[in-house]
Image 1 (cartoon, one colour):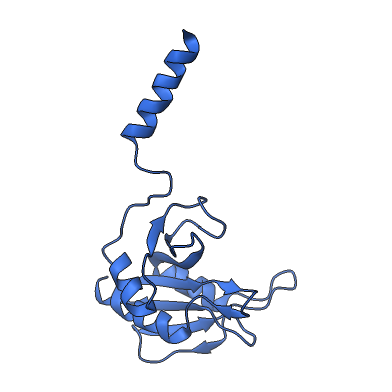
Image 2 (tube, rainbow, N blue to C red; image 1 turned 60 degrees about the horizontal axis):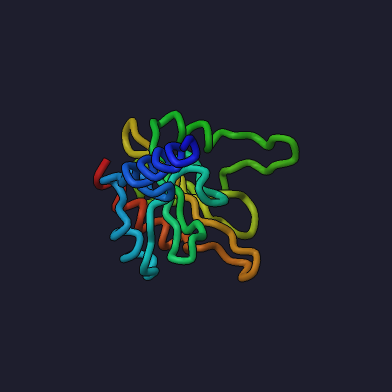
Length: 158
């Protein structure tokens, strides 16, 4: 009897709550935007912690349930902290090079041979756009050109 009630409660919770993988959309950057720019169909929003690499931002995964893009929106302080970050415990600084033509200012990251993060500031708002390194291909899930296009879309909606 108790097991039956517990099963009924669990079933009700599962039916009344959205899927565990779902995340609220953000009007500043949509699934359709990411699909259009990346050329990947079947992009989906996933919640923080639901997949490896899915952090506290707006998380986009591919149809294979692997992370493609994470976007963090914040204030200009986010941008300044990232740009001014010094090497920590052997980790190189985040700043690699300025990226002109996007927002009020932008830079790519990390320092080193491959950049897969773009930080952008527009007025008092900022955002970071993070692609994911795929060790099998030795490339990122999105190119820097993809990140620039997505950033341009998002900052136009900030």
